[in-house]
Image (cartoon, rainbow, N blue to C red; front, side, top):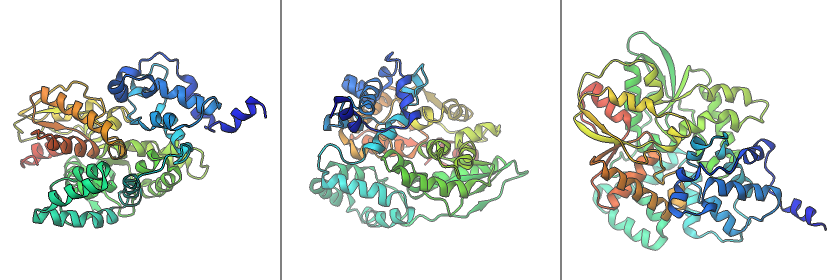
Length: 437
């Protein structure tokens, strides 16, 4: 067999459009200073430019998917900071996501540990399903209530490893035993401006349902009828980023059908919002669903993005607080939403906002990255927390539940007095006169 034929047999088959993204790269290196893993390691293969070389090499059949190659690709957070910096418009996340999906779980001969298997089981079989997640969390909530959670989680960490320990560490200290869904429809106050469909989120609805409730109340006040369909399912981000594309597509088709009859689809979760906006691309080759998916994806807005367009009145109450703002990757880089939350927070009397160094550098959460790449995620969290401390603020505001859990849990683990809030938490206090919590 000729060398060319051997290379062809080894080549990773990427779609023509995805391969084109690799060809668009001009190797300028502007992506490297904004890449979190390059900032940590200083290695070319752990930068976007280096990874594009690796992925193109796999597609051309010039290199094999060895354990080392896959290790560099797995180290990518898919934070999309490189896309913001790229002058050539390389849509990097499409390239890394398809490559990971095509590589699958094999190719290196590396055996999965029990801890990694358990993390995958939780991420793909439990987290995307709110009922299962509530059931899985119930024992932990009981242990929290009776004061035994710290002892049990410590033992489990020693026995099952750091990945399980990280999962336990991120569980918010406060939370209901069995969070309820709430109503499906909420009427607008005054003349109705639009009907808004809310993507509650699988993890968000269970662990941060109070933030959704506050967002609904704020939108009602601003003239929106809000619908929270019970038929909605996970946005598909967990599966999509984990290389399980067909399951992500199944979730997307279901949600397209659920949300296509509202005016706007809104989310309080940056990761969910970014995934929803990608539905047109995800289902782009599906003739039956492509047009519908593109239309629904174009209706999606982050909650701060939507509220900013509603021209809200100035809040009545003040919030005496000094805080800084962390740009969630999938809000700033994935959706291009930066000014809107800052503008809304700027309307709050008594709130002093302090700039954050590297505000749009990933905190290490990155979906389930902090469960699969524990050490790197921890280093990024420590870097973020160090920058927060330099502001002199004890409050960090961010628009993504993953970032909130990552920063809050790591700060607590370090003994740092930092409280993480969603912009909605602060705005709700300012409009309705309640304490920030």
